[in-house]
Length: 245
Image 1 (cartoon, rainbow, N blue to C red):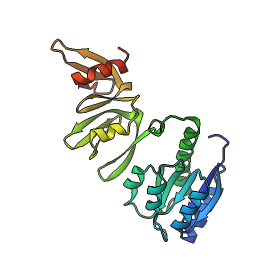
Image 2: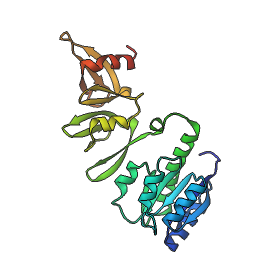
Image 3: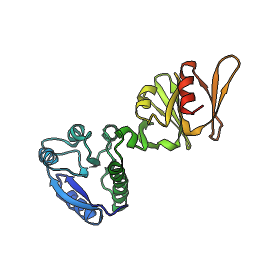
Image 4: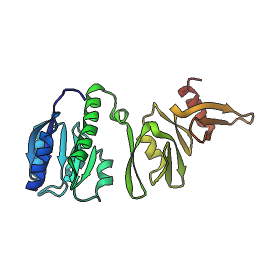
């Protein structure tokens, strides 16, 4: 971590929880408490008046709830970490680019892990001006009633499966209800490319492109299974250009 100090806003209506958050923040030298809001409407006012780097926010708040605040503010440069006793909003929170989702009660160790994650994102955001999609390093998906953050570098390829997708990674396969087109929009185009109506592939794993006499192409991946995938004719030229062939 660098020596920068990042401004923090606490949005929490319960006194014990506020005091605990203040104590945790005071034990993180990189963080500086710059504001406290005890209600949703006060939080919105503070977010309009001042620039905060990081916000720790409960969901059940007087006047305006935390999810409404996140829906309104998530496209700005502030990073949000949700702190709540309820898990049912996790999927939507991650869809709205929440940095983390802490379930109460949480330890300082869990809090510190979340802070470290946010600080990495904050430092990356200050070091680059590329579009926000390219800044991200993980794909957020819901699979088997849980939310997963999959590092881009762990994803080998994504296959369409009727009205869902299967994401094939170094560890396991994850099925999600998202369509292939929706997944494609969340991935960096410089790293992932459509090779077929039913397949997206991570270019880092492509080892060879083969041309058959019948006019069809296939690629082989450098994963444990040495997966072979078909290449649609209409996608072949783009793939060749991406592989500089």
